[in-house]
Length: 470
Image (tube, rainbow, N blue to C red; front, side):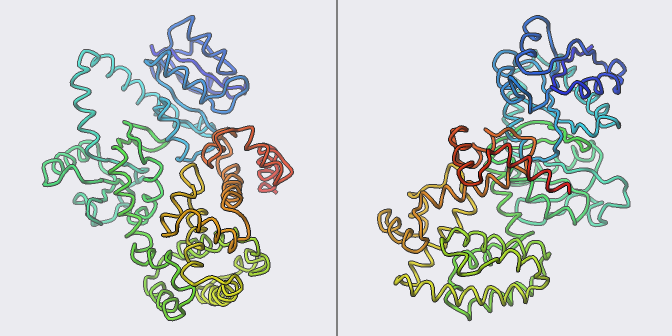
């Protein structure tokens, strides 16, 4: 029997897990339970544990801190995360700390947990049988870093499969392939054929339901960047095997550049030459119409650019209440007309600042990059180099054009990102939000957050979540 410890600060959740799942039938035995990480560690010191199921947000010691300690002190223990919020992005951190799976608490009542337990049982038993072959396992791990197999939720019936996929994999871009729902044997056979092909160490195989899933894959890939892990089970889905970061980043770039907005169009859009060149702007809009992209992609492109402009101190004078106006836009023509007006106002604003078009565009590009990536990597040195300005001149013209220092704008961008993430990742601890938005000190983050909003991060999150339920 696999000895299991359940850790959750909610009594009802623990009891629900214990009494609604046929543990013994699946080969597991609940040997203990705890309501926080410290108590769990004490239990692990007193008795052998094979599997740890832990919540993330708990008093005294949260799940992330517990996982860190378990990884250091009890590396043989398998870890499954309990969460109320099904979102893939937090898994990069959880996997790094040893998690092999996760369970959404609302799925406890159905067969999801039982299916997962049977898979874990097979993994643990298989590991026990193969402990003597560590050298072979390491060699296999090395091979695994040379390929990527990313499996999304399988189709529920063969009728959902795209006919073109029934024969095998379909190449959609260089190094990027799609495969529909197949049996494990079929997938293994396909992988074998691909490994034997020329340049086999450069491919990325993505398992999807149908063509409608193709664009979703680009949303999953960035979360796996810079990390590879093995057989990660995703709730109701199947096992995943993922390769190292370089291929993931490359595949993500290729996929995003094709299935989403073409790379050359995105490049022209982000260069911002169209701010002072109506002909180029009209040509870009014409291309956008011809591409017939999903409306959500187009709206996101416009909104991201406009949101970056909000960092300007005079944004309320340039385009007051733009978000309210944009919410009513239903066509590309409406967005085009609004951006044409923005271009005229930008030209007037640039002239009032007495700078050249090139310098103004450079600073606006910096704002867009600051909005897109305001994390730890965002700094004056890198941004000034990317827009081809010296650091000293960059600082001077940045403040003149934006109306605030680079440091102030960076802090503002990070706080706006933090606001989004506090509600988007409602399960995640405050220190995690702080780190992801470039604040290494949680206390400092909470302090400046309160100065800007009048609330500490936890209060802001609670207020926003309550408002969303009304």
